[in-house]
Image (cartoon, rainbow, N blue to C red):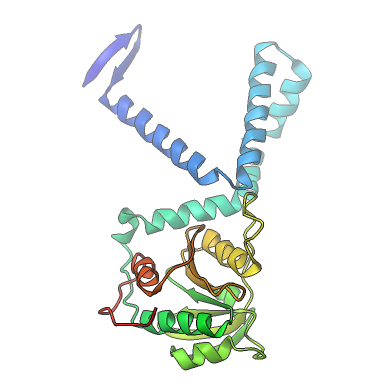
Length: 262
């Protein structure tokens, strides 16, 4: 179906769909880059692109030669290196979309109630905690930084692992495939430039992992006792039992709700 024609160029429904898809992709990319380290880099690349256009327009030979001699392969490699975290996050979110879930079956996660109870038990005791709930993204690199455990999830064990002076109390516990796989793990810190100065190291670590994977991280603040979750580079704070269960239910198939003390 052709809408109109300008000279030898025609504009039809396929062209309209093409423009709409490209505009949507660019919009999503800009939204993902907003507030990240990639935003200034994208601005820098935009300036280089504008310089290239100006060089060609005004026949600035030296500048035009420098830009053109770099070549497309070099630019492609540079983009992959510079935007590696953002590209990883974009692909992870694509896999988490409804389209991606057609090919990936969501896991049943019966251990959620144990995690919820342990989080608020630790909060009452005044102990900090980082509990990583792995999903589809592999966390082998994270597991290797901690102590291998490979045992069933239980409230007493989680509380013990985060109780000082336990050697694992400052690290993260990783739960994968229904088992506590490792404790005392080191998580990557978030590099988001606009994080509030009051955000502690545990919350930065939780955000860092959630930016690089599809894992859900439950955080218990040692200072305030507040329970939070980090997902997809965003953090939800000051949760009670019910809201924590709701947050986890967004990513996991939960068992029937059980009563727990708030």
